Image (tube, helix red, strand yellow):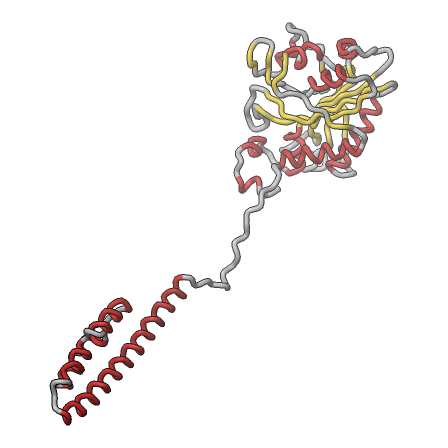
Length: 336
Ligand code: PHE
């Protein structure tokens, strides 16, 4: 029996092991019940007494040595596996955290809410009307008959004959007055539509309508309410002025300008050197409109106004192209 030859076979086998699966297989082929060492142990029986004792001891030592080698190797491969797992699941706790993107309200929504807040504080409540409106509410009932040149003032989107996308929020005035008796004190924020598109016009934009009807409502009430609004919205030193104008549903009518917030009235590109910026149309409700909704113009009077929300937002945030509000560019929107 050649022990050193057996040992070099074992060593060769062990050194060819390169992973844990091979290790198990090789271990069985060397140390298993039918393994190479057991084969040799079985052969001892055929030897005489002295040799039995000698080879028995030698083989036992070899077996123990082999066992130890396998224990070491197994520990080595288990360590490797553990390191590999750790490397795969490693977390760098020094990395900066991911900041979640938080959405914000659109600047037009913000502006509309601010306008609404101010009028609510003045005792107005909010009324709504449909975006798809009948010719009657959008024009007729507002004292704009079919052949009236005022229809050319607004480039109307027609859905079909007699049905339009509302060109202003004024039809809500009619709907409210039809459905309730005076006193009336409402604002009506919402989208309006006109077939128009350039740096200062978009086919869809927003207005906030205002309507106050009661006994003895005077032009000075309109001026008082709008003065408070302008001071709240643009600052307490902002001047406003009324410019005579024309609307079929108000008489007298006026357009309201505020002192240019960019140049404080000195004249600049934004106010086209006038020192003033137009923000709304207004006037005293026309007697004919009262008659149409069944109010008695001898009994009640009222004022109405219609404000352009995009215009207010452009002035407030210093934006010179209205289309910016509708590109949905997150770099623009996230500034507000
Ligand atoms: N509806 C008018 C417009 O869109 C504005 C307005 C409203 C004027 C109420 C007077 C009274 O231009």
